[in-house]
Amino acid sequence: SRATWVWSCLKMLVPVLAVLRQPRSQDARLSWLASLQHRVAWGALGWAAAWQQQRLEQRTRHVGQSQQQALRWCLQGAQRPHCPLSGSTDTNTFRNHLPLTKISQAQEEGSQEQLLPPTSNQYHGDAFLQATLLGLAALKKAHPEVVAPGSTACVTPTSPWPRPLPWLGHALGQASSPGARDPGALLLEALRCPGLRALEAGTATELLDVFLGLEADGEELAEAVATGNPGPPLPRRAAELREALEQGPRGLALRLWPKLQVVVTLDSGGQTEAVAALGALWCQGLAFFSPAYTASGGVVGLNLWPEQPRGLYLLPGAPFIELLPVKKGAQEETTSTVLLAEAQKGMEYELVLTDHTSLTRCRLGDVVQVVGAYNQCPIVRFVCRLGQALSVRGEDIGEDVFSEALGQAVRQWPGAKLLDHVCVESSILDSSEGSAPHYEVFVELRGLRNLSEENRDKLDHCLQEASPRYKSLRFWGSVGPARVYLVGQGAFRSLRAALAASPSSPFPPEMPRVLRHRHLAQLLQRRVVS
Image 1 (cartoon, rainbow, N blue to C red):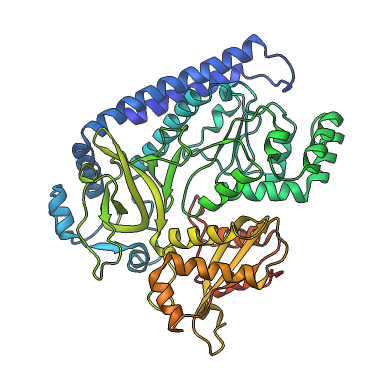
Image 2 (image 1 turned 180 degrees about the horizontal axis):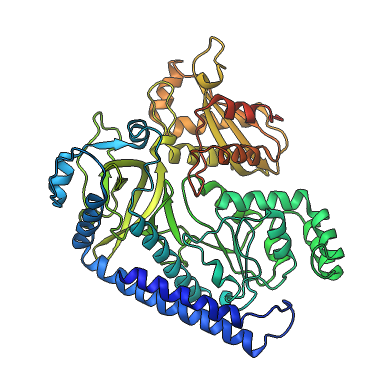
C-alpha cells in the first residue's frame, strides 16, 4: 500500500542520517554537517506530513467511503466462526446484525485475549503514524522555534507521539529521546539543557510525577549536574537549578528553562486534573499540546489545533467508529448509533469501535461532545468516561459532574491547589459501619496541610448543588455525607505504579477517578495524613 511505501522511504533515510550524525556538545556551534542533517530530517518529515494531510483531506471529504473501507478491513480480518453478514460490507446491515457490547463484557466473552485496540495492524500503524506526522507539522506551525536543534527533551521513558520516531531523534536535535531508560536519567539530561523550548512526557500524570520527584530529589539532581555525573561538570547550571527550586513550584518550568514554550503530552482518560495542576503551578504560563486522543490503547482523534487551550480532536473515520447518543436521565439506553457524517453539533456521544479480530462492536465508555466539523468529519472534545461514575443508591454522578463539584469545593479551601483525586464507594472499603452508604474521597493538595471539618463539608454541599438526585438522597438520609481524606505526597505516584504493574493496564495508562478494587483503595488509605 502507499502507506507502507511511504514508511519504507522514511526508513531508507536512517543510514543516511546515521552517517551524517556527529557527536557534539549542546553549547557548541552546529557544524554545517549537523545543520544539513537537521534540514534533511525535517524535509523528510515535512514531505511525509504533507502526504498524510492530503490523505486526511480525502478521507474527511468522503467520510462515508472512508468508513466503508474501514468496515471492509474489519470484516476481512474477522475470525468469528459464524458471522451472519456473509461478506456484506453495508454499514446498516452490519449494525443491525451485531449488538453493542461493553468492553468488560467483550473481554469476558473473548477469554483472556485483549480485544482492543480494535483495528487491523495496518490501520493501527497507519493511524499512529498519521497522528505523529500531522501532530509534528501542527506543532512546528504553531511554535516554529521548537524545531531548532537541542530545543526538545522527553522526560519520561514513554513518548507523547503515538508512533515515536527514535531514529529521527538525534537528527531532529532532541536533547533527549524516549526509550527504555531510567526516568531520572532523562530528567537529568533535560536539566543540563537550559535552552529547551518544548518539554515532552508520555502523559500529563507522568509529567506531574516528574515535577513532584524533581522537588523531592532536587538537591541530588543539582549535585549530579555540578559534578558531571554523567557528562561534563556544570557548576553554574547546578547553581541555577538550586536557585529555581528554592522559589517553590509556581512557574518552576520557566525558571529552569527560560525559553520554554510548550508542553507536549498524550491525552487519554483521567488527564484533566493533571493538566490543570501543571498549568496552575509548575508549568504556569506554558501552552499544552496533545497530538492525539487515545481510548483503550488506540488512536481515536487527531489534534490539528495546538493553539486551542482545551484539546479539540478530529475523528477521521478510520478505524470504524460509531457514535452512540448519550441521553442523560433516560430510563432506557438507546442502542441505535450514528455514523460520523450524521453527528450533530452540541450533542454528546459515546465512542463505539469495532474489534477486527472478533468482530465486536465495543462501547468504550468515552463520551465526547461535537463542537464543529472538518469537511464531513466531527470535531470533538472529550467530556468524561461512563465507567467512572459514582452510584451507591442509583444517583449516577458522572466523572465530569464530580470533578466540577470537587474543583468548586477546593477553590473554597484557602491556598489549596488540587493535584490529584480518586473516589471509592464505601462498600469497597466496608466503611459504612452501619451508617448510610457514602463516598470516600482521597485528595492530594498543595498549599494546605490539614483539612478542617468545615472544609470537608464543603464538598458534600457542592455535590448537592451539582446533583439534585444526590441532594434528595442526602435529605432523606439514604446516602451519607462524603468523607474527604488528605493523602501525603507521593501517594498517587504509588497508586499509578501499582496500576502500571497490572498486566491488563492499557497504554497510554488511563488514570481512574473511581477505584473498584479494595487493595488499590487501601494503598491510599495507608497514606492518609489528615
